[in-house]
Length: 501
Image 1 (cartoon, rainbow, N blue to C red):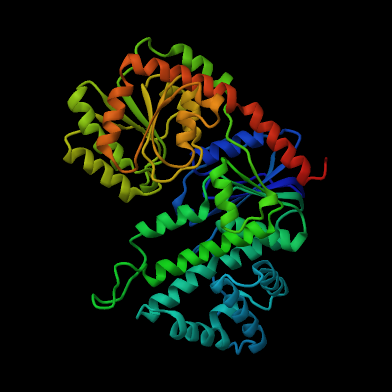
Image 2 (cartoon, rainbow, N blue to C red; image 1 turned 90 degrees about the vertical axis):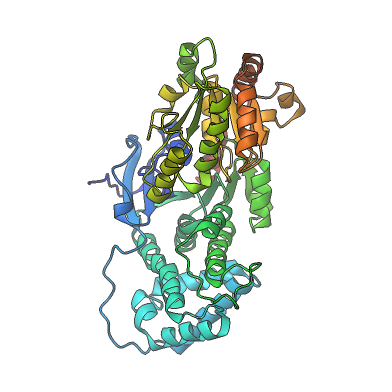
């Protein structure tokens, strides 16, 4: 596939696993932001895992996207030829001091990273050095003996290699990216690390916009992941302890987050609790601000006009079929709902290709509960088409920030049922006294409680409860979560970063 290319751009968007190849709330937001500012020329840098993990682009590129690059962090390039490499004791000593800073969370992380970035820039730590030098091998084996509590050196070696492999990819991106006036990363993690490298290399401003807290979400993923080895025997395992490799990955992502926070000039969160979490995780408070998501109300007003007069007993989860969305709780809930409302249906509107194993488990759960004809997997759908026909938007996630899909539902006149995650309680019941006075626009229940969710859904579908919730939903989104408000705030962010104010 050929991408547009340019010699320069105004803003480089650093996007990990989102736009334009992955649909979802963050990708929709990116598309929304690009289109909001036709006066700026955007470069898009997409970071993915492997090419085979993605299909065609899910979004049409706006005209002001003038440059696109897609890079993959694992298994896409040929390593340098194996050859003897004695290494450099002075360089490895400096690397050891950097690791000490990262491991202990003591000392100047930004300074340590600056030293690492300079070594990468001068080529003193290149991929050949990491893979083949005697000093690097000695450093890895020393760290294994000194720190690793897992008995498998083989798993330790390949874990370390998998962690470091993306560094060389990002070093090449940073060295070759076209000149821009500012960088904008939509997460910490690898995209945030790339942003820190670019800021360190060029001195251009770095903006960080976090929708969810990346380190928190990666920790949830790591707790659930089955690919992480734990080779301790039954006598060595302590059920209260996280396995060494899980802890190692968690520290790795935490370090990436701190590096991005240190280098970012402007840091935004979707709501106040996440801003406080950013500060707790190392973000300088004076650089942080809250900018909520906003909705294009005009896009959804025709949808509202087409809705049936009586709320249909259709409960819809709009999102990816992945474990963090806890689709299984949504499915289990439907068993109780259908027992009380036999005509009720559940729709799952979202792609299943991100985690095919989990998606298959969800299909199997439907079959085991006798819900095959009641739970419909629709795949990716235009949200306007879905919202025209459903009675409730349901969010069963175990982690969220400020879900765009709830606001889209509100704008279409659809109340919501959510778990108590992120800003959902604020979206349902209001934040300020004035906001709370609008009333509840749905209901909030505990995480992973299908019975509580079913009971709330049955109550919300009653017309005497549904219509007041609908009115509160419409009033809340129109007053506090409009696209105009969000665009005005981000206009100021871009003007500040680009030196226009």
